[in-house]
Length: 198
Image (cartoon, rainbow, N blue to C red; front, side):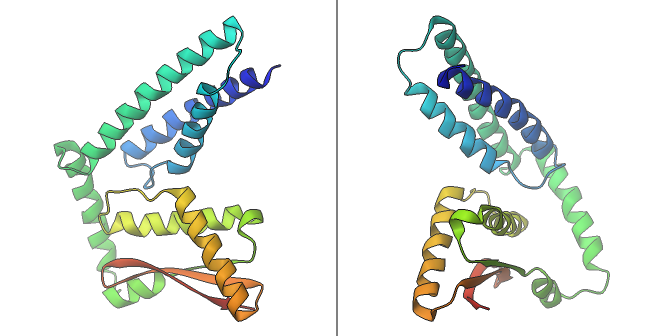
């Protein structure tokens, strides 16, 4: 099988997965937008568009899947914007979620205690070989931002680059192998703290 066909099949598979993930997200089953899978799919689409010398069948399937995915990406973008910009149905869903959160808050937890328990600690020594830990950190960062009402999704690639630079900086200045990261809410903002770790 050619490299182009391999890529087309990968895109088709990930597109099917992404459709399910967006259905769950837009119906408030999942709290996080499937940004990582979407970014992977967009990168693969770009690679496919840049391929040349495709056979007739490959060219037909590539054009078809590119058009289909782009159409859905635009649709999902509009739906996400409506979800966070006053759509009556989305507003009702958000109101229900807010009511549930308020009920949970009445179970004896103060605001400061909630902030303390919301801290997420992840130890990283090599970003390149510990991608799952960067994803874990990113998921928590996005989760807390969404709780605070943020509408803009942070780019995962930029986030990963930031963590890599910060890790290397602390490793170099502190002469350590491991760097601990903590994600928490402070003054209604999501903050990421980093320090050397044993």
